[in-house]
Every structure is written in structure tokens, then in C-alpha cells.
Length: 84
View 1: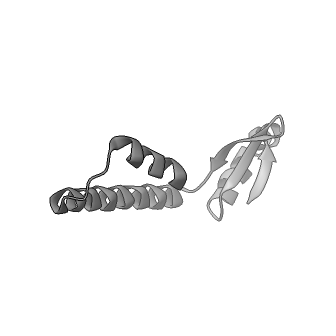
View 2 (view 1 turned 90 degrees about the vertical axis):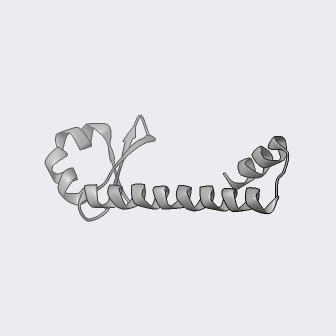
């Protein structure tokens, strides 16, 4: 991924928008990554994947409940933290 510092991104905004249509562009401020500019198409694809993942996770949870597969809340949060 191409990266620009915030000053260059501001100065080359139009060019950055064109580049973002091909691939995400990272923006750094004070040497640290702070943002990513991407095409609307790519953003919508990511949002759709997140929605599909959440729906699948909810469905899996409902199926577990129906099957009687339950665990204490603390165990669930511990497992989720390991996944993140």
C-alpha cells in the first residue's frame, strides 16, 4: 500500500483520490498511520463482508442456543479476546 504523509496528501489530494481508485492509500501524520483512503466500491465490499460475517455469527449463536450449547459469559469473552 502506498503511504503519504498528511502534508503530501493535502497537497496532492486529487492525485490521491485517483490512486485510491486502484488501491488503498495510507495517510501518516507525524510518522504514524492515521487513515486509509479507498475507493467507494472497496469500502462497500468491506462493509458487506462485515455484515455477512455478523449475520453468520448470529445464526451460529442461535443454532448453538437451540442445540443447548451454552457457556458462561466470562468464557465467551475470553474466547472472543483470543480471536481479536
